Amino acid sequence: MPDAVAAVHVAVKPVTPPSAPAAPTTGPTLKTSAFKVPGQGASGTISVVTVLVLLMLWALITNIGWIKPMFLPSPQAVFQQFYEYVTGQANDKPLWQHFLASMFRVFSAFLLACVTAIPVGIAMGMSRWARGIFDPPLEFYRPLPPLAYLPLIIIWFGIDELPKVLLIFLSCFAPLALAARSGMRSASQEQINAAYSMGASYMQVIRHVILPSALPDILVGMRIAIGFGWTTLVAAEMVAANMGLGQMVLNASNFLRTDIVIMGIIVIGVVAYLFDLLMRWLERRLVPWKGRM
Image (cartoon, rainbow, N blue to C red; front, side):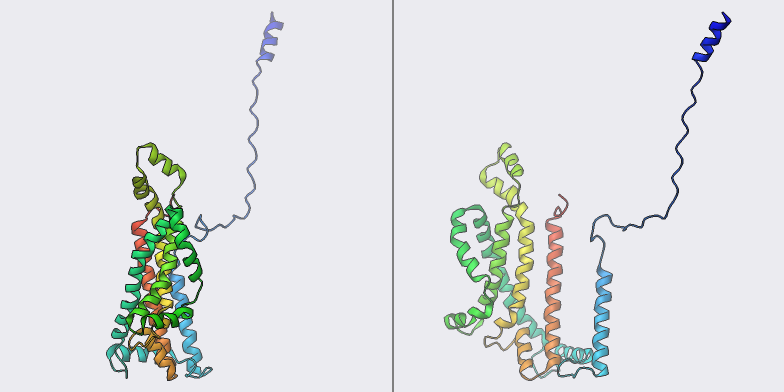
């Protein structure tokens, strides 16, 4: 009997748990970016610093005298011309008159292009007949520079305001129509089939599924189109214009007034940038789901 008890004690001998693994040796911590997505984070401060550095380099080079003022005037001279044009002291029309004339030409052409090009692009995206009709002329004239068909527009429509607006309109029309056409294919087939399965009609699918999906591409096309409109501004105001930012730049270049030329270029660029910021704000308000799906 004692042998049996001893055997039981041997059988139920407690098993010692395995020893815990040794803690890994601590090495140097790997530094990673604070942002999980490449390119994430605000860049406004970097942009401001970049602009300030460029202005400082511009002022340094021109004030030392490395470049003659006829080729690159100093920032002070450019600002002096801006002040004289704003206050009406320049030997020309005030800046606000040139500004309003250019704004009328560019935005009237841009709005006309939005009214016509977006429906054409939508029709091209929804109908093979519309695509077959409008695609050849669009693809033909889209790569042409505006100066190529400017003489023909002058022959046909004269030298009044119409050719200026028409030239800018043509530069805005093609990117808007192509962006709307591309946007009409943004809706997935699953979304369209889901709408049909819930009893939606063909027009309801276009209105509530396809058009909202196309809106981000249409807004991008509007941003591109207004950029093309501004780049065509100088060419459009070559047509017997007596007012406008482009005309002011061209007239100053004839007299080698580089300070006025640079001032006009800066004004044109700043206005275009402000409008681009406005379009970005509208994009965030109208399509807040973009980039989150």
